[in-house]
Image 1: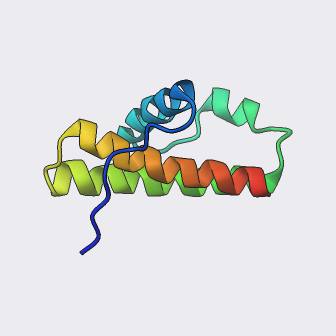
Image 2: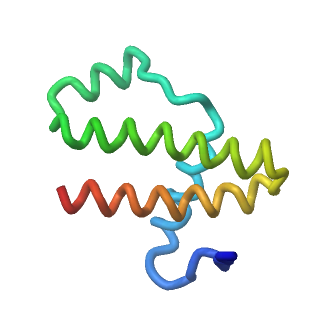
Image 3: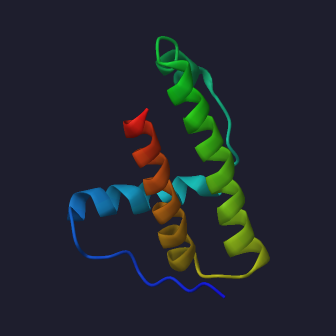
Length: 94
């Protein structure tokens, strides 16, 4: 059994807050609206593919932890934020 603690307090407070805030948006089903489609128009296709994969996975993770397993939304947000940070790292490495 794997057990992870809280997000470490090392690093930028602002970055942690943004990750957790963005993680809360994973509650909603992933979709590409008009505004997002317009912003993605001239972007690198690899980055768009990574971002779409992230949206689907993070929503699935939120649903699994919060809805199916009954975890509190704060615990779920931290878990999703941790995974979101991995996708951010992947985009910077592309």
